[in-house]
Image (cartoon, rainbow, N blue to C red; front, side, top):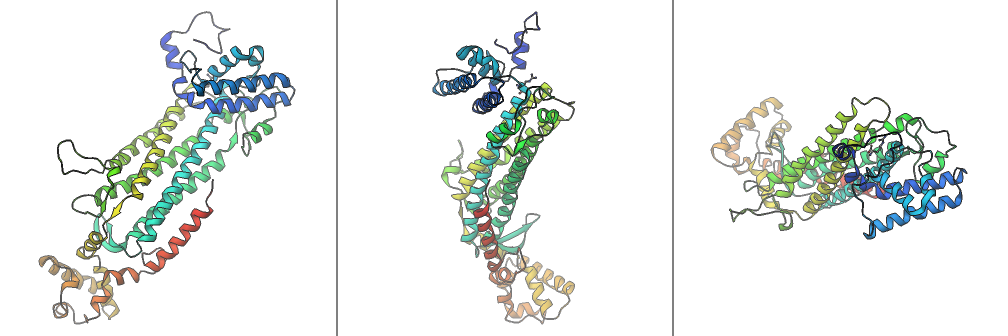
Length: 461
Ligand code: ARG
C-alpha cells in the first residue's frame, strides 16, 4: 500500500477496505490524461513563481519518463497504489525526489480526477462523432444506390404503403445525423477546464486557470469551484446520447433480423458478420445484429446507474462519484464497438431487390393509391376506401394482387375503373407521385441525398 495520506492516521486500513476503496484497476485508463494535466499544472505553477523553472522541468521530464516506461513495459501499474493519481505522484517522487512532492501544490485529487475524466470523455465524444460520420457515409451510399428499389413501408409491422430502400435507410440517416449533432452540442457544453477548483473551494495560491484551460485546449475555466468537482452532467448527457444511439442501432438491428428471416429474405448478411449453429447445418444467424440489440440494455443500465449514483450526493465531492468511471467507460466502449461493427455489417449487406419489390406488390401497399384513383375520378374518399376494402378482400380470397384483376372484374366494384388504373397503382407511380418534402419519390430523395451529402461535408468536431 502506497497512499498519499497517512499523517493523521495511527492505524492501518484493512485489506478489504483498501481494495474496496481503490480505483486503480479501472482509472489507469487515465494515465496519459493525468500526465498531460499534471504537466500543464506544473508549467503553470512555475509561470506563477510557485515552483522554480528547474523544478518544473524536473517534474515534466519525470512524468514523461514514467509514461514512456509504462508504455514500454518496464514500469507496471499495480494495485499497490490506490488510484492512478497516487501511482504517478509516488513514482515521480521516487524518480526526481523533492521536486516531485511539489506537483500537487494548489491541487486536489478532486479537481485532478474531474480534469482527467473531462479530457478522456472529450476524446471519446470526438471518436463517437467520427464513427457516426462513417455510419452516415455508409447510409448515404445505400440511399444513392436504391432510389428505385421498391419495398413495402410498414406500420404495425403490416405492409402499409410502398416506399424505396433509399427512403427507408434515409430515415436512419436523419436519426444518426441528430446523434452526431448531439455529440457536437455536448462537446460545446463540456469543454471547460475544472483544474484549479482544488478540493472544493479553490486555493490561496495565485493559480492561472485561464492559462491551464488554454494549454489543454478548453474554451476556458469552469466558473464555480464546487460545481467543478461535483459536476458529472456532461457524462450523463454523453451517456444519454449514447443510449439514444444504441436505441437507433437496436431498431435497425431488429429490422435487419426481420429482413434476414427466411420469410422475408430481403437481405443477405455477409459471412463475416454472421455465425452458424453447432447443431443445425443450414443456419446462418444474424448474431451481430442480435448482440447490438442486446447490448443496448447494458448502455441504458450504465446511464441509470450513474443517474442513480448522482441523485443523492450533497455538494461537493463524495466518494460515490468514483462510481462514474466503470459505468461511463462501459457505455463508451460498448457503443463504439456496436457502431463500428454495425456499420461494417451494413456496408457489406446485400439487398435482395426482387424479394423486396415482390413483397410490396403482394402486400396491397398500393391500396391507398387505388382509393385515391377513384377519388380523382369523382368518388368521395370514404366510399372509395370501402370499395377498395371489398376489392382487397376479393383479392385475398383469390390470392392475387389488385393489379392481377382484369378491367371487367374491377368494373364490378366500380364503373369508374378504366385501363389507366394499372399504371396509376404500379409501384413506380405510387412512389413517384409522392412529392411532398420528405416523401419517397426519387425526385425528393435526390434532394435528401444532396442535403445529406452537404451535412457530411460540413460536419466537423
Ligand atoms: N479515485 C477517486 C475518484 O475517482 C479520485 C478522487 C479522490 N478524492 C478523494 N477526496 N478521495 O473519484
